[in-house]
Length: 530
Image 1: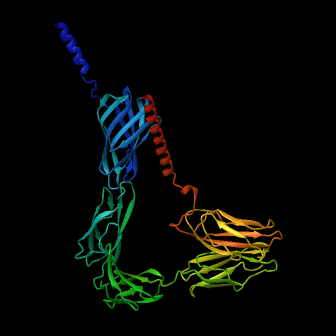
Image 2 (image 1 turned 90 degrees about the vertical axis):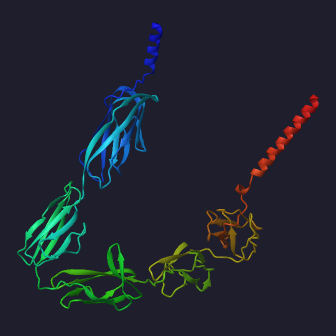
Image 3 (image 1 turned 120 degrees about the vertical axis):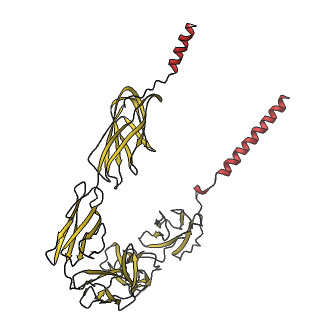
């Protein structure tokens, strides 16, 4: 019986969990001079007396904070769903595991707690320890330096003009009193200097309230107090109009404006104040650019207070953006011009030094400028025709003038074929249009009955819609003729290409045939065995 109890006790001890929660095996060392909206760092340090190669921990952060983890060299770390997982190919004991990079939202300030909880330590996937939570408190300083409110007392029925807004820093106050009290409250933990009760000794005095954020950035609110009870403060308009079009009141994001659309290069703004003693600036004749034009009318009352009226006038853009040519001839010769084709070749003899170009734009409002059509040298000469539309957009047509190669009507090809296409070739027809599929080059075959000709094919690479293939045939004296093929691309038409052959049916037929043969061989074998 005694042996039984001893054995039972040993078995009981073996199944008791070895994990004992003790003092935390981790520490957090965090920056403590942080600014709202910026990223702070917390170093995660291990102080374990147990060798391990994996650690898991939950990360608890203030709301709207985000976190990333930069592991120390030799250690891998990742964060998923606010859970930190640190692993290493070798054992970890003491030292830096890495750094938590934590970013608070811009409105998070004051003391904030960073906490690692439910910390588990593993060795080769076996849990060997559970350690207590570890946390650090960090202070985040606010960058806010605005007032949340600014009210007035001790000045009768006085009020701020305009009405208070946090980001509006200049105000005017009219009062009959000889004192005024500024009640100011700051956003966040900002400090205020300059508020309180003020004694008024002048007709106009400016007071300044300074708001300083926790990080030391300051903002100044300026309030000008005017004491002149005999002067009118009426700074409103009785009439506001323009001589062309109609102004309509529009409210957008709390801002009022008067809008109009006109088709004119100028407009006259007319305004009449409620009070004949008020002054108005910003009226009169205005020059309009195309699109949006903004004008501000300021009405200043007799007492100096003012009100702004925003006028937005949109001038319709009637200018044309057409920069195409309608026709193009060289020395009176038709060159098969098309407005969407911007490059051409033209051959001249050795004695030609210039050509006469007649370039007619589609719109009379467009201008045409021709450069390079004089003083030709041997070989290629570039002539540019720049068409400028009324709105300033432009298109450039290019003519490559080739000097010294004379086209000879006695030089012909006997035949011209293109694999997969029929172009209806004729010896004396030098221009063709061919619609092709997706291929980027063509298989062109030229036939002539003499060995005194040479053929050069130009432009048969990277074919695009509008490409021109030139087939230049030259005799032994250097005289040439050029056959041209204009390419049109079509998504629906395909040429014959090796890569378009469908090999799947062929392969499937082969496999099926092989299976039939094998089956026959099995049947024959069985018959023989019988």
